[in-house]
Length: 226
Image (cartoon, rainbow, N blue to C red; front, side, top):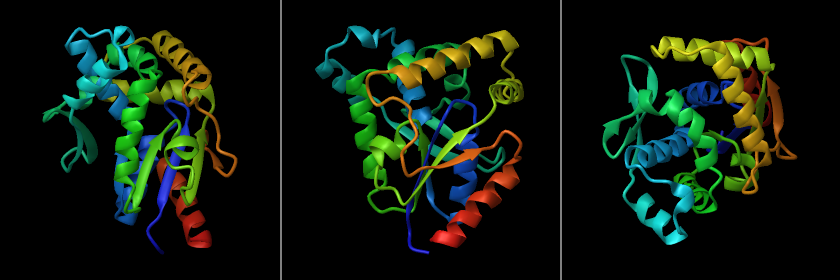
């Protein structure tokens, strides 16, 4: 199989990153978590008490120039972790404060433009699995394989709750419900590159599928068509 770009879009807590990481590992591809990129920018703004909504575009460009986002695989935990300017911030970017702000930060055109530029550069040599909310529609509209992931809302809430519990984050179910509803609304209604299914995307509803079944499902697609 020739190297391709696999673009995965979908709603929050549908397991986009989980399947993307598994695919990258299986195929020997690079993996990019665009959601983590926006979370890292949000964390930087919070840490430096910056209200990005009050900045001019040139000020945002200057701020982004001060931010370096990288990913590294943790063999002990068997997960890819996000680094902000050399510091592991994986747990920080998944916390409540960042989760409540990231949808608003990601709506800012100047920030999205800079992030998209970085994402497109990462895919110039193909062999990339990348997940987010506008990958198949904006970042890589010509991606060879596009997936759009969804799941029942109750299952998404439970998955998010279990994820946070594993990371030691104490949170009430009601908070997660409110957060996911707000993020879904912001993602689908934002003016700049809203979340939508690409016309040529294949829908993966994983409500009743475990991680192994999802990986097998996608690998069957690849083996049949690529």
